Structures are given as structure tokens and as C-alpha cells.
Amino acid sequence: MPSTWLLITNATVVDGAANPPQPRTSVLVKDGRISAVGTQVSRELVPRGDDLTEIDATGKTVMPGLIDAHCHMTYGESRTEEEIDLYTSPELRTLKAAFHAQKVLRAGVTGISQPGGSYYIGVGLREAIKDGIVQGPRMTAAGRYLTTSNGLTDWFPDSVGVPEGSIGIVHNRLDDMIDEVRHQAKNGVDFIKLADSPYGDYQAFTSDEMKVLADLAHQLGKKMTIHARGDAEVHAAASAGMDWIMHGNIMSDETIAHLVQTGTPLVPTLLLLSNVGDWGHLVGAPAPMRDGMKSMLDKSADALHRAHAAGVTMVLGTDSGFSVTPYGVWHARELELLMTYAGLTALEAIQAGTSNGALMLGLDGQIGVVAPGMIADLIVVDGDPVADITVLQRRAAIETVIQDGKVVQFDEEMIARSWPHDRGIGYSVGDLTYDVVHGHADPDDPSLVTAGGPPGLASREEARDVVADLTRREHAARQE
Ligand SMILES: [Zn+2]
Image 1: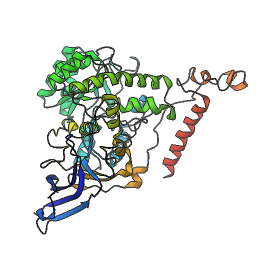
Image 2: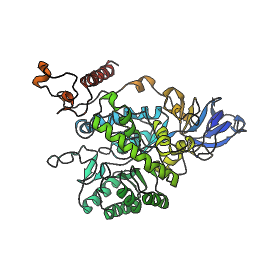
Image 3: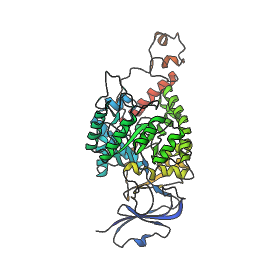
Image 4: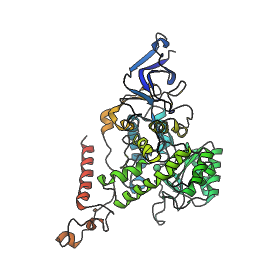
């Protein structure tokens, strides 16, 4: 059978392994794998009669597609935790996940790892993408986050519990946790996600529980990761043999040395913190949340700079899937944040966003580098991301997305659409007091809005803007 070839000529190759860029270089792909990279590579290497696609990349950059190791496809751009856990039906969540996957790929993200989501939607989506039925990045998935009554994702009062539709599942006894790991492994997850304390102020699992669960996951051929923001749980997770760690916002030098010694990679996931902290006011994010995320970001800068200097492997992760981190928009911004908050160079940031994520895709050593033998998931960029990392954030600059050696064709009109917000039960954004109606109080007094209602909307104007903006977006979405 004749082979299928792709030849990209005269590009500047940024290889994803932090080597210096190679100018005037061509990349030849045969049947989905890179077969040659160099200045002498040409169509002479392709047998006559074989199928050949050529791309002239003069003045452009060719690099591996980005890998986002922290992308939640089941969240559906939720505005509230209730929307993530309660309101959207499993059927609709699944359809939304499939719809959103093409947006992620369009942004030049050719690989994602989903560290937790509701039901087994991630496993299904992974298979649909692999089979070519749904357009999206290649993917690995965890199931529901395994948590305790003291961990992230047990949001609701005990009278409610953790509902079946939640992204988390709560267990307080080791035997029950073991049971859950066994079920998730049976149902086809790639890895198990533990959810430790929300902000890292204590350990939600004991160190022994972590060790037993990680050993079991490994015995069953699965990997394990954890949401760990604080020093104690990062240290314990590395000791337990977790395969990578999410966040690590607060870390002592000893814990950092432990990560280096155990070779445990870190996915800092700064984007959610930064988007909310820097721009949350534009979309009505509550002020206390904005302040909290901003201060977490500042604390992270200290730990992450020390971790980078010590040699901890960093990986791109964004927590895309919230309304403040919509799909296919901000993935590449994490590279800029890794430079700002962890001190990476542009080449190191690109490495964090490409080859360092191969482990999370279960393809360590097979993807994320432009070199012979590697899987040909590539992007052609109109610009120089080494000189200006932000070029990767511009949709128009991601000229061509190549998946398994084939140029991906997108339905740009479909990608431009956004799915209407599902539902929330809200009556107002403030309290309708006597004073508000009859004008005895200053209508610009922020306390009129903040007291009782969603906390922290800075002014009535802002509150009105939020409502207007949401209404506009929904209207626009329905019009299309
Ligand atoms: Zn997350």
C-alpha cells in the first residue's frame, strides 16, 4: 500500500525539547510519524506515486502541537459549581464536551489530559476522538475525583452529600477508596485523580491512604495524580509515588528537593488563578474570589521560581472548562504565565507545553518533539513564539494544525459559536431593600450590591453589566 507523506519546507523548527531553533529546516512525515528533519530534506525522499502534501512554511515556525495536561471537557464553560455538578444532564454534558473538543484542537492544542470530570464522559470522548468520530485533541482521562469530606469537590452540606452528577466522589474509609479505584480502572480511565484540600491548608488524605491508592493504581496499570496546593500534601504525594502533581502553590525547599529527587513533574496550572485575578472583574467574578486567586498566584511565584531553579519539571495545564477559562482561547497563555511566575525561558515554556506533557498522554518519548520517529502532531505558526510567546494566543497565528501527519480541516463557523449557559437559579445580584427602592441610600454604595447577594460585585454598574453581557452572549448564541 502506498504511504501518505507530508512535507513542510523551509520552516524555523522549534523542536519542543528546548534546543535552539533551526532555521530553513524541512520536516518530512510518513504515515503519521516524523521520518526526517533537516535542511537537506526534500521531496526526493518520497517515492513516486505516493500521496504527498506539501506546505511552504517560509517565514513561519513549525513546532509540536501544544499539550494541555489540565483540561476539563465535562465542565462546559460553567459559571457556577452547581452547573458543573448538578444542573446539566449527563447527555447534554457529553454533547457539549464533544462540541468543545474541536475548539481546543483549533487553538493548536493537539493533546489534552482531563484530570477529573463527571461520569465517564472523558473516557467516552477519548474513544470518540481516537476513532475519528469527534474532532478533537488526543486525550487521556480520569474519572470522578476521589475526595474525602475534607477535600475539594465535596462542596455541598452533608445533608445534600456529593450527588451522582458531581465531578467528585466522596469516601472517608480506605476500603471504600480502594473500591472506587478498582471501579474506575475497570471503566477505562487512564489515571486516578485525588482531590486534596481546596487551598492547601491541610492534608485531606493521610499519607498512608495516598500510598496504598497509588500502589493499587499502578498495580492495575493506571497512573495517579492529585490536586495538591500545600506543602504537606505535595510532599506526601511525591512520597506515595504519584506520577505528577497538580498545582504546588506553596512548597518548602525540602519538598522541592523531594520532587527533584523523585522526578515528579508539576503542573502548576496558573491560568485559572490569573484569568480570575487579572480580568475577573470584566465578567462579574466576586471580589473575594479575585483577591484570593491573585494572592495565591503571588505566593505561587515564590515556590515556582525556587522549584524551577532546582530543576523540577514543569508542564502546561490550564484548568480550561470554566466560563473564565473557555475552551480553545487561553491554553497558550499558560506558557507566558510560566515565564512570569516560574522564571522559565520561552524555550523552556514551549518544552513545558509540548514534550513535558507526553507523560500525561501516556506517550512519553513518542510525542511533543519534532524529531524522527515521533508522532506528527504539529502546528505551523505565523510568527516567532521564541521571541514573543504571546503569538501562540492569537487564533489567526495558528495557521495549520496537523494531527497524525494530516492537516486538520475545521468548521470555523461552528467553532465561533458558543453554547448557551445552561442554568442557574438566581433571583438578583443584590438585595431589594426599602432603601434601594426609595432612594434613601446612595445608589452607588457598593454595599447595596455586595451585602447578601453574590459577594463582591464592585458596583451596581458592574452588576448591571454582567447581566447585560450574559444576556447578550446568550442571545447571540441562539441567533446563530
Ligand atoms: Zn482542575
